[in-house]
Length: 76
Image (cartoon, rainbow, N blue to C red; front, side, top):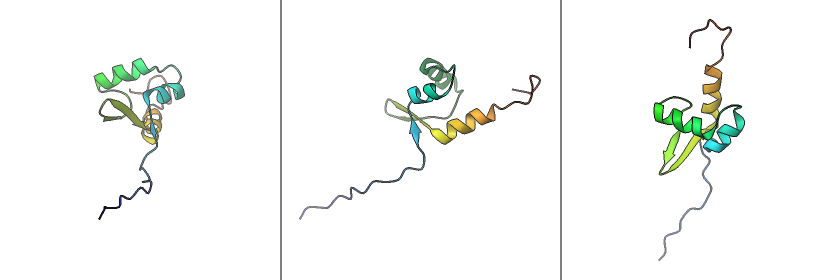
């Protein structure tokens, strides 16, 4: 007797973006910049599935918000 495989879609915890989608949403940021930041351990958190790089949309938003400054003398 064959085993039935459940094909019900699973709801993911995050909405994921490709590096191109992130770059398209952030002015002045390129996929090359994102790649350099991944190499340097900077930028928004990301996931790797084999060779595929994914960013959680809400974490990209949090990373951008963390860069909010009140003035030029704020610490970086």
